[in-house]
Length: 231
Image (cartoon, rainbow, N blue to C red; front, side, top):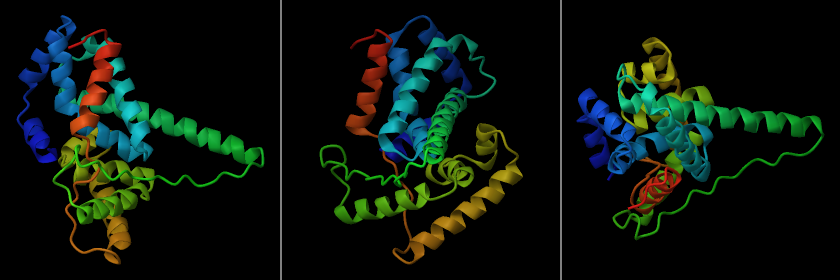
């Protein structure tokens, strides 16, 4: 499903974005749902790449959608709807990350021991992802953990370029940095990930952090309810 959604994204035009935005502003519930189903996976991956936690990433995307739809009139089409939404997700995710870091500093100043968070990546249920074998799931776990271990500044670039497949220019625009900076950070991120993976696996298809099936539908339904729409 990841490849299907990525192909769909590549076919989206600015006209499509504006049409969806206009329909959503007119309180067309089907437009809200179409936007979420089109961009759920991309936004989830970006959030997941920043906060390094499955459930929190889902919360980030949900809050970002609610904020975006409440301010949809500010979308003018200067960038794609995907980029506009991605920036809102990044701001929400970074805000949570800063709060987490402040809380950690406060805890340290109070001489409390902070245990390192151990993130357990779920092995997707067969109903949610029936075609994935156990070996593939184990490889994806290794990739996800290696990505989580990247410093924040490298992880966001790695997720955008490698996992989401954005171009250098798209990533630079999304993260508000120069293309040269994207290239430098990506080179370093790949080297760090490769170093961690080389001892354990060979060539890997980087298709981590799936967000499809039941999880995709659950988030879409939750946002629709918060917007007072129902099927």
